[in-house]
Length: 501
Image (cartoon, rainbow, N blue to C red; front, side, top):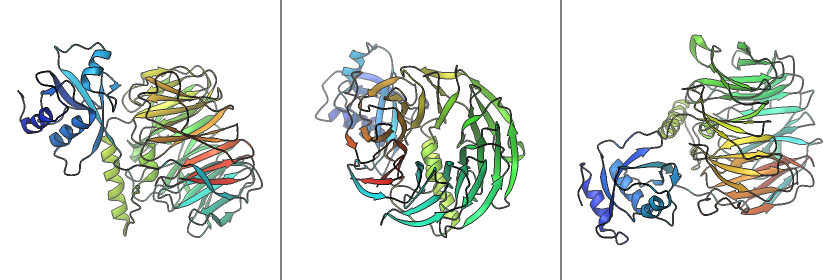
């Protein structure tokens, strides 16, 4: 087989594979999802009936990987199905075989998370609706908060309460873990933020400055600052504030929106993103002397912007921790791990952002590079409540009042499938750390688990992998542990439930 590069050995191995057909080949070039060609690979003659398994072997050889990674492959933004081959995709897409075929590859998780299927623990204690549940970055601790103004820390192994932290005088509207797991922040309806020590359950700081209720909290990613001592808050008072928990001071107060800020994210590239009822999203510098300086406004929505998600959310949230449960002896080791994890994610492409709005649409952005939208995603019939990128950035899941969860391509915004099954509004979605599964929480009092393997599902809709009943009222809160072992849900019935395989 002819080969214009120095990669003849792996290409020959591919051709000699028992599944390949003699004499029929395609000229192809491998690229990352960001369009960067494999170094020193050039253009290769590839058997037309090459399967994803064979292409994976070839790419591992081209990259010189000692540990064999798994990959997904795309041609013209269309995935190559596991049970298909290149020839079938080229025919289906009516692509020319006379030109160079660009095959983009995306690294997949090397581990698998088992789907949750049963309630192992039901944890009472709250005297009001549970509005938030969140696992620590290592997945070993759980916190819940809500209408009773109490922050509760739980031991996930025994499903018993560790601390009941009192002090808030209003509903707890938002919570967030520090990426190192050393601190936990909660914001309430009175505009007050409290920082807690998860080890002792003691309050570390009370941060006052906002005049109205807190609508969002986001910590600085650990790979940008190993101290993990800053976070940003947003409020209905139309301002953003960047706090330092070591000093207890507000370092920067930012204004610019003309209405309540509904959501805030601290990105992996050193920017903060805020979404508002004024229909805009603002980008702000988040580091150095220019911290808090305005960068650009992203316009496109016709109604208030409810929710934001970044393709880097999972890695920024979990910091140095992964599914292996590795412990770190020094802060330097943890910092190096956080940097390494983010660098591997960054190899897959530029940080992307998805926004959801009351105008029933989502918009995909490259917020660091441009104020122009990549794509407008239409299909929901009512307001979009929540959006979430899969940990590997391949997929976007969106939840809406129209009782549907929809799945979209994380790079192009292309619609993939509608997840049909809920009979009430869907409030939240969350992903398993291997990106193979996601869960949704609904007004219908159930949690449903879905698979992201939608290649054969088509546009007819996708049935759920399993329904998790047990709550007696609307399920407001949902989180999948970063180590993949558990899902937690919180409901209007004042219970926190833990779900496992």
